[in-house]
Image 1 (cartoon, helix red, strand yellow):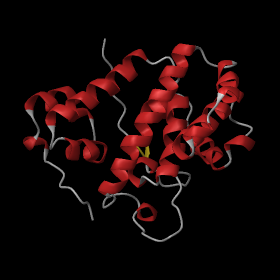
Image 2 (cartoon, rainbow, N blue to C red):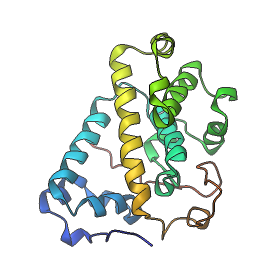
Image 3 (tube, rainbow, N blue to C red):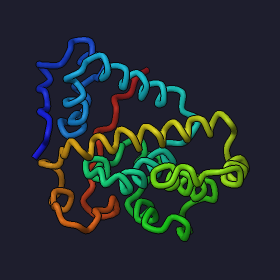
Image 4 (spheres, rainbow, N blue to C red):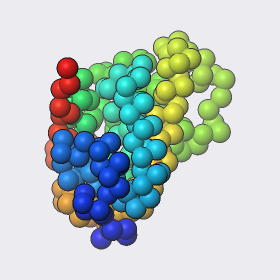
Length: 203
């Protein structure tokens, strides 16, 4: 069961509630925020940061989603693994592509840039001091320095907040395989992920 209480939307700080456009999101999508809402100023800072990533992104939705899901596997964050962002699905993230994350170095449907970015994410999540000049040189063949800053920052957020979310154990309304508590690791590849609501279009 969850280790921290989820706040109801009526209990949210009013400014946080307005920032979230909560009427455009499902209850499941709001779950991590409903825990972070216990500390409104930190929750608002997180929303602002993620908004800046979204607004000023130089990496594709597809790549960011692949990185998020691969890191979620390392973190064993079940709420992260069970979710697909609608924008990423629209940008070509299919369940077949997600299955490529089981062995990304062998996957023919990943680009060379995606494979090296995923290798970087793997190391950042599991053995960050093994990242050296050679890997950064390889990354530089595919990404600008601005893109590398975003790549590292995105991975860092997914690693840190994903691990935190995993400890909160917000699994009670996830598909059944994400709720089991055995020794075998859970994977994000599978037929039962849920997709977030697509954001409302603004003109």
